[in-house]
Amino acid sequence: MRTAIGVVFLAFFLASSATITQAQTIQEEGEVVVVSVDSTNLRFSPETVTITEGDSVRFFWSGEILAHNAVDKNGLFDSGDASRNVDYTFTFERGTNGSFEYVCEPHEDFGMVGIIIVNAAPNEEMPPIEDNSESESFLPGFSTVIAISSLGFASLFSRIDD
Image (cartoon, rainbow, N blue to C red; front, side, top):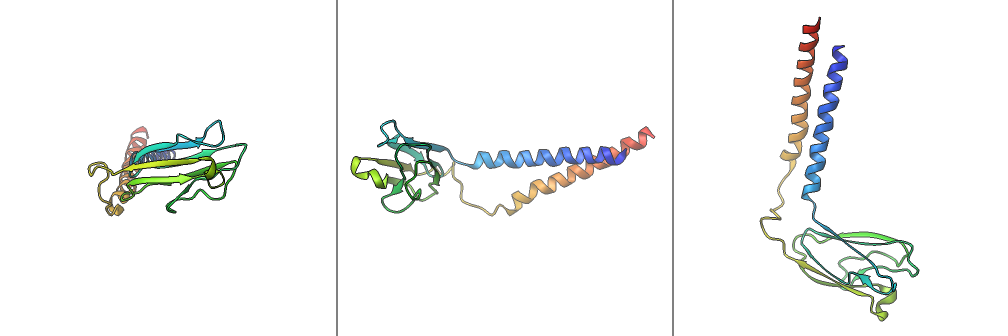
């Protein structure tokens, strides 16, 4: 009986620590702006996007009539060979602010061009990169303390029942 109660408490607290870690990961990521192909099949939609350093642009289209790609004119990103199905994401890290013109290589002459404007991130939104080894180890250590405490309480309650 004691073992069953201990295992239940241990599983509960390990699951809740995983949820905390996942929530923190989601909060630290930037926004994602999706660029697709419009109904003419010869334009990006939207043609111009404005983001902040740390944000991502996802080039996504599926089942298009014509094959497309998205290639930065200065070589910063390249979604690969033109395809009817593309799912490519590029993240603009700190220090990549500016204006970036990209093209669909097979349809550049038809005006299939887009612009990504990347604004510098304010200092308060993008703190300097620090060594996360201490903060990452905090949650597993916290989970261990909670799990051991739970086992102690479970054994205490099982002794009371006996």
